[in-house]
Image 1 (cartoon, helix red, strand yellow):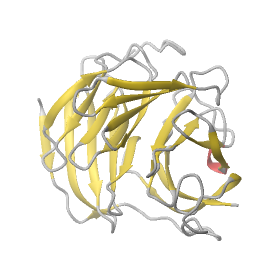
Image 2: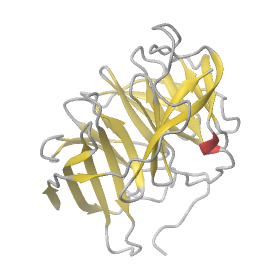
Image 3: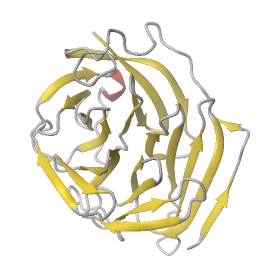
Amino acid sequence: MRRFVLLRLSLLLLVAAAPGCTLYFGDEEDGGGSAGGGSGGPGGGGLPDGSFDFVKTRSIAGEYPIVGIDTDRAGGLWIAYQIRNGDYYKPDTTRVVHHDANGVKDKEFVYTDEYTNVSGLAFSGDAVWLNYGNWDASSGNLHVRKLDPVTGARLGSFGLPHGIIDLDVYQDELRLSYEWNEVISLDLATGGENWRQGHTLFEDGGTQRGLATTADGNMWIASWITSTIYLVDPAFDILAKGHTKLLDGFHSIDAGVHLAWDGTELILALDGQITWLAPKP
């Protein structure tokens, strides 16, 4: 068997451009649209205070199993896929693609040099960051790669502990979602640790997954054991929280729950689907 799961313990580079390909856009639900209200609220963009529901405004289907997502700050998306080959002696295939604001795929980078599970992608403007490693401590060569967003070339890497599930970038920080109820901040230039902060939002730990950062540094954070997604400040004081039916009953230790924030809506990648969620009172 390819990987030995330790429960709760955790170049060949091909660059191919595929212009003209688009993802399928699903229908909008009633009550959709970006978050209403003024510029106030804890996360900016008119976020409501307190508790609210996330309302699906649109969705797209991924081409393969989704293992990471982020916005490009211009209406487009960066998406990471990993295709498990099922053979211990054959590395998995990882694909990093970019879709512009119209949904057209204009970049695709393919990597076949690692056995390690991929979980988490972030875009910093000058680089795409890709995490090799997840909750499975047996998955091998744990590190985050810095990739050129134009050519896909590997620019560098930082070693990481196991249990890093999702990534995001805020200013000069690379923020890591650590499954055992922590967020770790690394310096983008050196990989040195700036800070780490723990919390008890998800009780015993081992379930934390998606992470996304707002313009003022607050964080959306999700788990696979609850359908509530929290907005917290860097000290993990709760500013707001929202419920989504997409996570109701979704209880799986290997759940790939990844988040991104486009300024007004939360983007949730789950089970091969990417969904835009508007916070509504």
